[in-house]
Structures are given as structure tokens and as C-alpha cells.
Length: 139
Image (cartoon, rainbow, N blue to C red; front, side, top):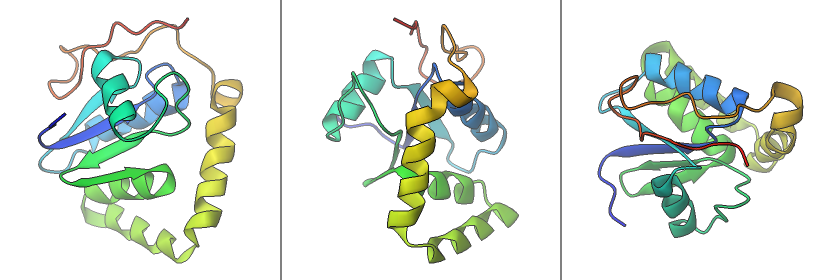
């Protein structure tokens, strides 16, 4: 699957992840990222293409050109891509990735319990021209 540009595959049912996607909508770099809920057909296909189980994704996925990033590296990349002072987030790379990713996995495993779960993704094609319209519903 050839997806041009920049894509973020995120959990459209997670309140924390949805908040991160809204932040990204307001802090887009150039070119902007396309937001794709992992519950959508495209999101599921991208996860599978990059070796993640679309039925039980443990991370979100950032595709930027020929790079694909997950876990803490993906968050650092997205925040830094906003430009300006946000690029200072690169300093967090001094923390070993194994430590950063273990914290990421702890939050990811508990995201619904700590932050709640939505019944549907908030994104619509009208709210973000770079988003994937999602008809995702919680099972």
C-alpha cells in the first residue's frame, strides 16, 4: 500500500489518543499529517502492513515518507514536527529508548482505564481535511 505524505494511525476510541490527535490538528507542521483512526479500514490496513495486529494494536503508528515510527519515538517525532520550541522535545532522546518505551507501554495498556473510552471516533471529514472519515464504533 503506497500512502503519500504523512500519516498518523491512532486509536480513535481512546480519550487520550483522541486528545493527542486534536492537539496535532492545532499544531500541524508542513506538510500536515493525515489522521487515520486505527478502527477504520485504512488504519487497519496500515497497521497490518507494518506488522501490527489491527484487532489488538498496542501502539499507534506514524508514517512519514519512508519512515515508520511507533511508541515513544513516534510521539517525539509528532511533537517535534510542530516546529518552533516544540523541537526541544528531541532532548528527551537522552533517555534510553527502552525506558521511554516501557513508560509508553504502561500508559498504552491502561489508557482506557485511566482516560476513558469513546463510543465513536470524533473525527469526520468535515472537521479535518487531512483525516480519514471514521465510522468506527466501540465493539
